Structures are given as C-alpha cells and as structure tokens.
Image 1 (cartoon, one colour):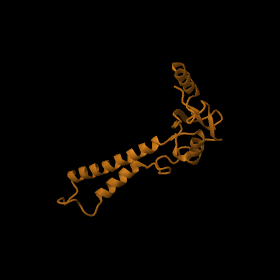
Image 2: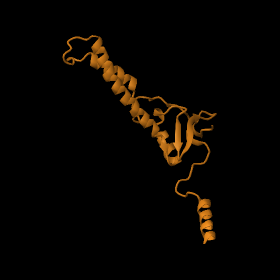
Image 3: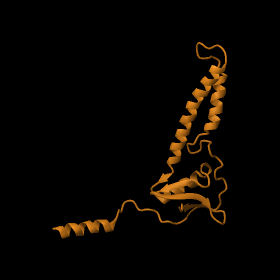
Image 4: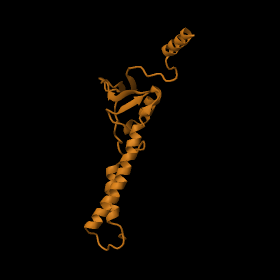
Length: 154
C-alpha cells in the first residue's frame, strides 16, 4: 500500500501543473519601432489620470469658488489650508487609482500582454515591467529600434 501511495505521489509531482504554463524566457516582438511610446502618459488613455494637473485645477476651482464655507467671509490663511487639504484628498485618491491601474499590467498569456501593449503603446513607457504568468518582462527597444518585451534579468 505504501508503495502505491509513493508511486502515485511521484507521478503527480513529475507531471506538474498543466493549467498554468509559464511563458518561455524569450523576447517577444511588439512593433517595428518605438515611435509613440509614452506619448500619452498621464492623459487618461488607458485609465491613467494626470493627478498633478487635476490637483492644480482643484485648487484653482476651490480658491475661486463663488461661496466660501460658513462662517468664513474672506480668502485667508485658513481658506488656503482648507483648499490644500480638500485637494490633497482628491490627489491621493487619484494616485491610488493610478497605482491600482499600474498593478493591472499582469497577464496570464503572452498573447494578451503583447496585444494590450500594441493597443496602448502611447500609455506605457520604456522600462515598464509587465508580469506574465508570474514572470517579469520589461518593455524596451531592440538594437534596431524595434519595440520588444524582454525577460527581466536580475
């Protein structure tokens, strides 16, 4: 009986996991050139927001509001702190949302990752790390200027 259990365990361990194959440790071609990469960073293309621009706009709108929070009647140091505090909250929410979106550059298949990068080339930067089935790759250019997805070597 022990022999059967041992042989079964060895068979299971040697087969491995068939449902989640790791990608090969090779380079994947994305496009012939890197033109346009990163041209829309922070503009909202794939869900990323320009938090700095939103923060500036928030402060302008707060400072120029037609009505002030009661009981204040003038724009003073307290009001400056109020606008700073309120706009900082919005800024932090924006940054958290962008961070969450950045973490979504995880794929289970190479084809999905390459397709997404081709479609969103303007929203990624050279050096962006992409996780495919637990393996880290980096978006870079080849010697000929081609945009590639290369394994991240430690």
